[in-house]
Length: 148
Image (cartoon, rainbow, N blue to C red; front, side):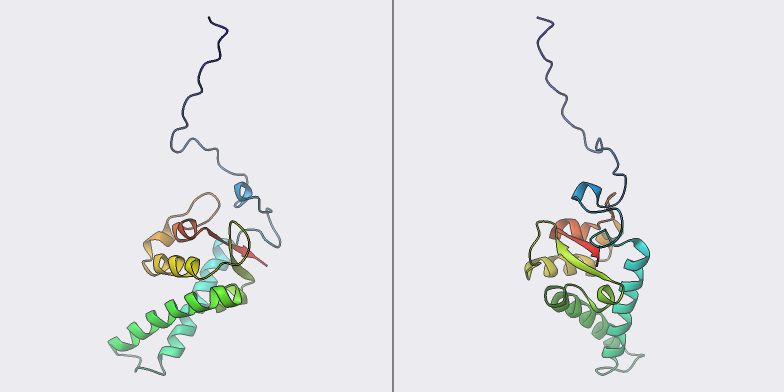
């Protein structure tokens, strides 16, 4: 009776071993093209995107107004939703050598950028990362930000 195999223990949340590099579990290389876009590039890209949105917002409202703040926010969101499926990423992504791709491969489509951007606009999901350096907004949308 002792020779019977014991049922394996169910995996507990958090039992997954850390990956050796961001993107390893996703089948992505450690560095170079198609590797996960790292923190510095991501921050620089979002600063570029926000700066572009601020400049465009000046066409619609004076800098010191509340309307300017809202215009900047709306323009930022619109840029993300429109440019990710058409250019593969926002202006900031492309200038920093990154693009947004679906984990499953193929075209990112329209729904992924919308879901990703709604969560990005909430800010907090962006601050929650996994060991693959994917924010919650990317995990829910089934995307990853890669180099190249």
